[in-house]
Amino acid sequence: MEITYEKGDLNELINNAPDNKRTMDFIIPSKKNPLIIIESSFLATTSSGQGDKSKTEISIDALIKEHYPKAKFIGFIDGIGWYVRKRDLQRMVTAYEEVFTFHNDELKRFEKLLIKTFKK
Image (cartoon, rainbow, N blue to C red; front, side, top):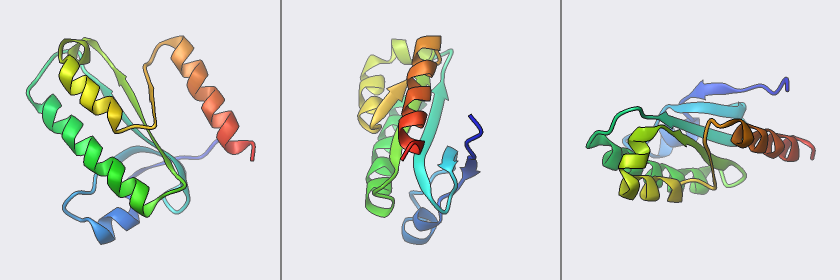
């Protein structure tokens, strides 16, 4: 679709919440003007760290809403590891405005989100 993206740390989070900031998987179109911020998690196995990850995502969501109110924080979550840890999965999805899997139908739905976002 020829839409630019970056990955890495968001400056406002570095400056205002250095202990809580995260390296983001995809920042669309740029760190300077993020409209969509994506975290991706595909887990083939289960681990106790999934609970910590879900709690971290919730705190990151609050920071993004505070410092980047125009940006959508979305998640790509897939894999049997999440299916097994349903409670952690349930917490995890509450952090995101939209949640997608890597299934073809979901990727088409994500493409529609991109089109809607960048049509403006």
